[in-house]
Length: 430
Image (cartoon, rainbow, N blue to C red; front, side, top):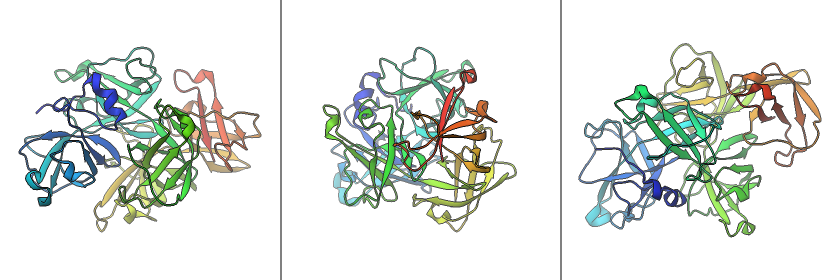
């Protein structure tokens, strides 16, 4: 069985609908959420997986009339199927669905870290971007056996591609991967915003409007998706306790002035955080990874809204450095046999600090933001483990206050053209 392939000519319509289209079935689309990322599924007939499920794919959705009975359902996910090596297998069963009481789908996951955020990638066949890379997606990971040769790699990311308007394009190439494919291309949209002083990554969900009263506000929404750039810089209401996305926070933007483009959009996110060396840090979840070696320290006060991991809330997590799969990142790992359904979990984070008023403060990275106006002060001795910004280590950086996008926070902005070819500028808040 060959892996799913997405028609180049059909990709944009598929992404606009929130689901990719497999080459095996251009008429029907199947999708769901696996580890809080949208995954596009490939239907396989007459197959029932064996073994113990490794998790659940939530909010299954399809336009296939044979299987719409399962829309909104959670499907059990299996690995290690001999007939489909390297794939995740999602299986649905409900005798109330009549003639099609069961169904099975395959999916491969593609992911990588961009601007300190973990993103799910959509495969794009037969496309090579042009121009100069805008940066690098680090620690590419996939379960697709055609591309596991690239696992752990840093992959150039391109913007302004005429055939991929508004999308970020990651392109991997390595002749040593022969006889497997030596090149591959993936696209993704970046969505993020500020939640409780932390920058969080958002996942787009189509055709959802939350109900009830909002429980907070996501600040400074930002995206590369041209459909929704009208909302850039906006404050977006956040909702909890939505039945369709249990355990998720739901951000919903609405602005009639955005016409003729979309006037509304919805995104979901999980929040993971903890305290490292006296500063709160945002954590990014990494699936299926256990660090090795001796712990370098302890992250305290772990907190999450993810029901898979709330068992660890308030716990101490061991922190590891020097992991080859996550270069430049600190890795926090939790394990407790008493926790179900997940007895272990792993997250990565970057540490940014500086000295302010004689004390060391933790900084939170803010992508794609430059403060305006005059600096009102400075911080000394900026330090980070993030290889994108170690060029600034030891620097004194200007501080801006009264920034409307980050009310009540101080904004630190670094700029140095001599840091090229790495990032020449970066922004943090505290």
